[in-house]
Every structure is written in C-alpha cells, then in structure tokens.
Amino acid sequence: MRTHTIRENINRVSNNFKRSDLELCLMNCLKKNRSFLHIESSYKLTESEQSNFNSLLEKLDASIPLAYILGNQPFYNSNFFITPDVLIPRPETELIISEVLRAGDLLENHRNELRVLDAGTGSGCIGLSIAKERRDWMITLSDISNKASEVALKNMKRLNVKNCQILVSDWLHAFNNSIFDIIVSNPPYIDHSSNLVQEEVLKFEPHDALFSNNRGIEDIDQIIKSAKRVLKPGGYLIIENGYDQSNEVIRILRQEDYGDIKVLMDYNNISRFTSSRKK
Ligand SMILES: C[S@@+](CC[C@H](N)C(=O)[O-])C[C@H]1O[C@@H](n2cnc3c(N)ncnc32)[C@H](O)[C@@H]1O
Image (cartoon, rainbow, N blue to C red; front, side):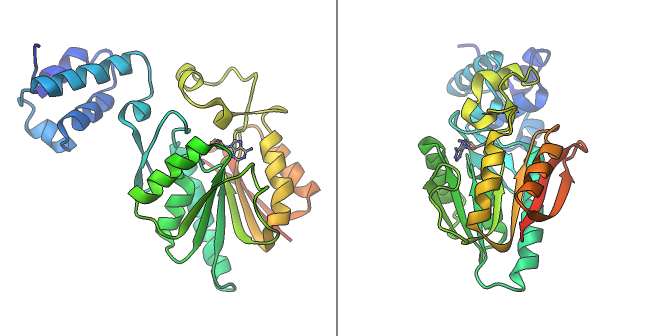
C-alpha cells in the first residue's frame, strides 16, 4: 500500500473535506494531538495507520457525521462517547447547563440535597455535564431508549461520575410525585414535515430523537404537563425548544400555571430555551 506523510495526506484531499475533520481523523489514527500534526508534518504514516486513515476518509466521503465515525463528540467540558443510537450533542445545547447551574445554586441556599432530572438524556451530555460541575447534587438521567441509556451509562463510567443514576422511562412516568428540584430536557421537537433538516442529519441521526408529532410540540407539551406532578413546589423546568416554538411553549406553560417564565437565547440569538417554575 502507498503511504503518505501527514502533510501529503492533508493536501491531497483538502479540496474535498474540511481541514479540521481531516486533522481529527489523523489525530485518531496516529493517537497524537494536533500540535504533533503541525510539528511532525513530514512523518510518514505506517501501512496500518494509512489504511485506517483511508477507511475514515471513505466514511467522510459517504457524509457520515464525524462524531459517528470517530465515536465521540466534545460537549461542554467533556468528550462524550457517541453511537448512531444517540443524537450528536449540539454546541447550542451547552447553554442549558449554565442555566441549570444558576437555578440550582439559587435553590441550594434553601434546600438540602438537590435533585435534578435530565429527561431524554441520549448520550447523557446534559445530565453528566451538570453532575461533573456539582458533585454534591444527585442527577437522574432517563430516556425511553434502552440503547441510549447504555451509551449514557458508558459515558458515566468513562467520565467517572458517581452522583448519577440512569433509568429507562417514557418521559416522567417512572417517577414519584414532588421529587425533583429541577427538570431539564432537550426533547425531540422538529415537525415531521420540516424541510430544514440537513440531509446527513436525516440519514444518520435517530428519528425518535429529532421528530415530534403535532407540529413538533407533542413531547414538549407532555413534559410540561407531567413535570408539574414530579417537581417540588418552586422547582424549575428548563426545556429546549425549536426556533419558532417559543410562543407556543409559553402558552402551554401559562395554561398549566407555571410562574417565572423566561425565554433564553442561543449563540445565534434564537429563542431556544424556556425556563419556568412550578408555583
Ligand atoms: C433531542 S434528543 C436529546 C439528547 C440529549 N439530551 C442531547 O441534548 O443531546 C431527545 C432524546 O429524547 C429521547 N426520547 C424521545 N421520546 C422519549 C420519551 N417518550 N420518553 C423519554 N425519552 C424520549 C430520545 O431517545 C432522545 O435521546
């Protein structure tokens, strides 16, 4: 097999792929960091490294998302193990972590053990990031998908997080009344007929994690209605929603008598999250 140096490998396909993707693939094959690629750019790959790299290129060429190719995705302060059974964590979702930490810190002054639920946890990226930031809080991660729960469990072990439990539940069905101080969720919220979803998202990411009935609002509606039972009085519901769903989410929250309703923007100044409190 013909092998190439790091520089040659990047240059010969740099018109077809993003340079950052090529670098991540090379870092993965060589088990080296980015600075090695720059400092040792004339290093010639071994046959097995080259064959590994070539097979990653074939997958990139088939438009498979890089996170599924490499099996991991950075989110907040950690690197998460990812399989096609879970949504690839999105950078805009990171903002929900700071909002949960802020709400929890306010509550903590008045309460003993703080309990947080991450409903629809997928890879566990939201709940585990919170658990790492606040080791004395107890975080429950739940998902309807067994396979997603296995991925979250693997991440919990990999990140050495102890203050977490994971269980399979259809939204909040598995939980007793008035047990959580905060419920956070990034549920599926895309309308089935939306034509804004990118082709590779549609082709490779799990549809149960993306789409919801009733113009994308059905799961959000269900969570808002059942969170009232499961939250403690004064507890927070912090939920991610679609770019055009804010008004509808506020309408349901008001109808269900939540207070302190607040809309939060994402990095692109889109109303992406809604925070509210059970009265
Ligand atoms: C948009 S993904 C979010 C995953 C992860 N929290 C994140 O932010 O990357 C939605 C998650 O909700 C889960 N889900 C869908 N329907 C559910 C239900 N009825 N009960 C619980 N979880 C559900 C999906 O399996 C998926 O993992």
